[in-house]
Image (tube, rainbow, N blue to C red; front, side, top):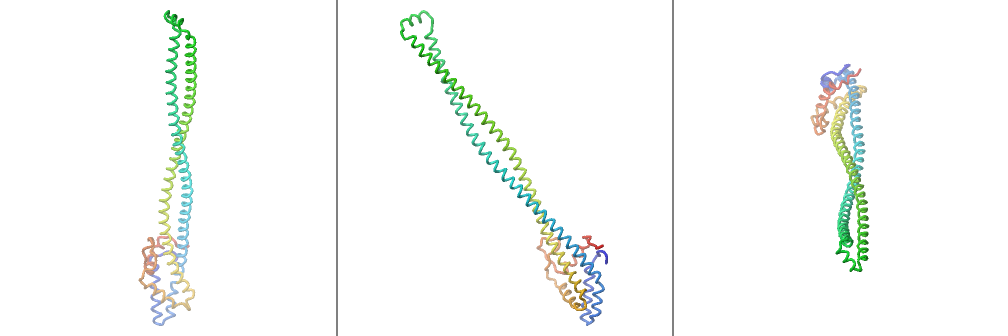
Amino acid sequence: MGTIQKNNFITVIEVLKKSVEELRQQKKEEATKTILSISKDIQFLFESSKKLKASAEEEQQKISDTITEIIKSEAAIRESYLSTQKSIDAINVSISTNSVKKDDLLKQIDLFRKELSDDERLLKEHRRKLDELNDSSAISIIRSILSLGLDRAIMGVQCLINNDAGRIQELQNKIQKFKELLNNNSSEIHKAEELLKSLAESKQAYEVSLAQLREKENILNTNEQLSRNNLAFITNAALFYGRLSVMLVQIDHRIDDVVDIVTELDDKVPKIIDFDSTGKSLVSLREAMIKYDKVLETSGMALK
């Protein structure tokens, strides 16, 4: 046997049973010859099984390594995600603080504008009063001659006007200053909102990446479990053919082992995890070895 054949196990079990029957008939020499007739087949199947087992172990390790890398990637992305969220929280606090500050500035500007309006009204009244005092009509001149306090009144009103103008200028300066503060505040809020938008997009991208990695990890975890189950199945088959191989090497004093082997094959109690299963399905040794034939056929594990 140089390549994988169909029904390898059927051929083996038939020879094993024939050997057991010969042993029962006290034909030990014939039983030995019967077993040795398939020694090359058993050795080939054993070597093929070891090769398939090594391949399954490699595949299982690849899946495990990939899962490890995904977990590392998840950890790195999650760290970036948390850092981004921390920045978002800080910016939200900053925006909230600046918004309160903006409201306070607007209120203060409104207050200054109200005071400015009041002072401008007073200025108009005082200027009107001054105009009356400076009225050059004849009646006003006579009234002025009779009024000894005219100059004093004019000076008093002029003083009020000067005070009004000073307060108005001061209020205008304050309003301008607070407008500049308001503009700076609004600019900070705008920049923070733009940064917040960018961080929110990054956060969303992290969430998408994490979701994709988790989905991939879940699939790989399922595949890894399946791979482990298949490896266990193949290992059992390799152990079976390995046991036969050892028996052949020590055939002179281990020929009776064939009886135990056939007895185990006749045991219908399911003890072996089935191939390509979730691990919940068990099969007997005979069922496993029959199925293993198909695994070998499709594996391309023929030795060269």
